[in-house]
Image (cartoon, rainbow, N blue to C red; front, side, top):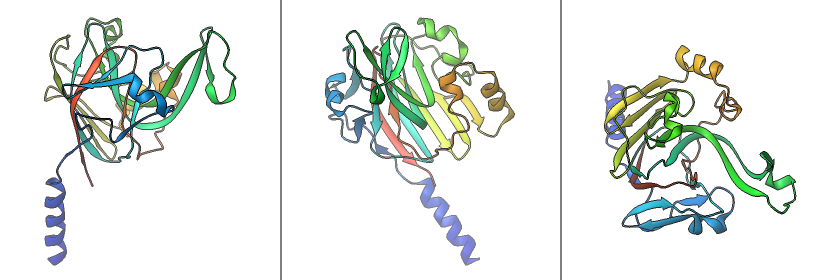
Length: 240
């Protein structure tokens, strides 16, 4: 009986664990550039309590300095016309890449040549964020709320420029939920036949390489795709 009482009390305490800010609305405290720390402050701006990517040649996605295993992540976002962004979790690997004649080459092992571009790859599951009018959104598995490239959202509310919307990611063991404006749009288990079929069907090698999601405690990432998605009120609550 004492054991059961202690268990119930522990569960009650966990259910009351408060969420904490991941973005304080004033600084990049708690975040870092994925590869080049020098470009974090030149790739993002903070204004009116929002975090926004800048349209600059050298961009940097952001990684949380802490890692998380089971959590509820809440955030608000607003898209510009045709904007494309997202929040990634269960990150499996990352790399800095040169862009040379439509080829992607590792920065660490290839010398820079005139005309080279630069991009970053942070590979994990992604809560997709996109303007409904963007070409990206024509694919149901790339609409806002989707697990990008794998699971399409069910009955997502419309996403258009001008208004803030709310998003939520719940990761609890093998169970994943995505919410969009308080509407459950994705509910999936990583052990389910549905996601297994999605893995089998995907043709994008960047997504295929994530399987079988060996790393379960990873940072959170906010992508920088060179277009404007503003974020605010980013909070996380850790689950047992």
